[in-house]
Length: 111
Image (cartoon, rainbow, N blue to C red; front, side, top):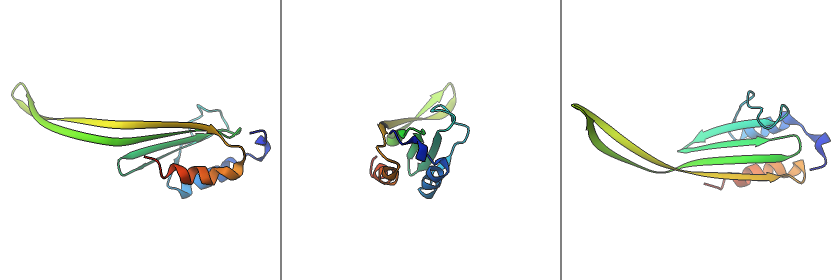
């Protein structure tokens, strides 16, 4: 996106908070002026990060299954839990900041 001059990180934070995300102010892996946020709900964790150029990365981790079995270590009974998760990673670049609300809404439908 060539229109980086309209970058408004506070507006991005407000959009993410309105969708239930917690802002991670310490996460600057996409640059000092980037915004990163995380949300956990119903067996899913979502990470969304975006930089001032409109480049974004979304990661969706979803529980895909869980099995349990009894066992023992020596004379101590234990339960072994095996969890399977799926990770979806989506990357893209917004052509305009006007597209951000639609991108966030569309991400809600993915799992």
